View 1 (cartoon, rainbow over the protein chains, first blue to last red):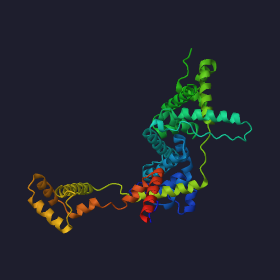
View 2 (cartoon, chains in turn purple, brown; view 1 turned 60 degrees about the vertical axis):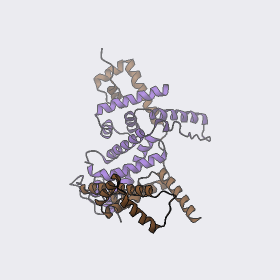
View 3 (cartoon, each protein chain N blue to C red; view 1 turned 90 degrees about the vertical axis):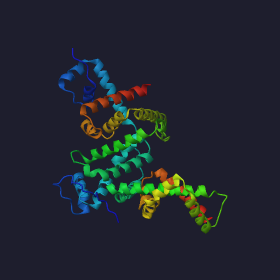
View 4 (cartoon, helix red, strand yellow; view 1 turned 135 degrees about the vertical axis):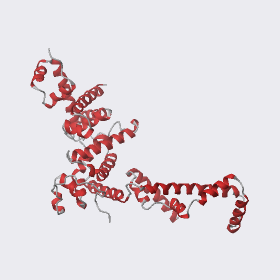
Length: 203
Length: 191
């Protein structure tokens, strides 16, 4: 029966961190402790990492691809890549940031491989007719659709910067860590992303 | 007169971290104020877009199970081949080519309208092959001398767990299609 172990000759991410003895300890452990335990051969550590971060990773993927099926596939891919690549995680950033980096790379690759005409242009609008003001709700829904469409048309790095800043609430420094580059370049990307959204909404 | 805010400074103004000196300019410059207000409005408009719909609670259990399956498939997949594996695979590929060429020769010698008993056919192939004095035959027979039967068998036999790995690499959509095809084949087999 295979186990959830890293295998290979990986170096422990933080040598000073001793893996907790029991699964109960692991459930409450910090991410760096989980990573160290995983690299030391713990069967449960990786599963806890998945459980702890699956929602955030899925949400990032969903915001890129705007549909459940692709987001689910991409999120799975992120964790498989994480399983293979955790031995390279140096611990100089949060595990969440590192997972976002893997996730954004997966999403950008998917977007690059997909033809533009395969992007969903209009999502299903869900307007509750029992709401107090269905017309207002419809207007808001249409506006949201336009904004989503504008975001989908942004260049990949601007799109990634905008999504990570507004929805994931990452700092510009963290975004620079995810996407690579300087903090200044990230801010300029964010500026142009907002300007382009405005331009696309007006056009 | 000071210069207008740069893109980076505009974002700093949005974040409330613009240095005091530049903030003085922002307070006195209508153009920069309009600019930053527009950026802020856009950021709010983007932020107001409906959030990600939460999948069903069962989804997360299913998700974890699928990740575990994929990870286990990764664990049984060899990470890198030793140097000699390439030599073996090259020999195996050459053996496969030779096998195909042999089959081609056999087909050329025995077109479809000449159906013969197996024993007779084998004898005929041997006789005709012996009689064949072409350069192609010399090439084929020369190649075959260099191969072991095990090499040929290795090429023609699927690698261990290759099917599992191939299945694990399918997307959910591809798995659905595969399941439908499999069901159709099984149904056909029962008929």
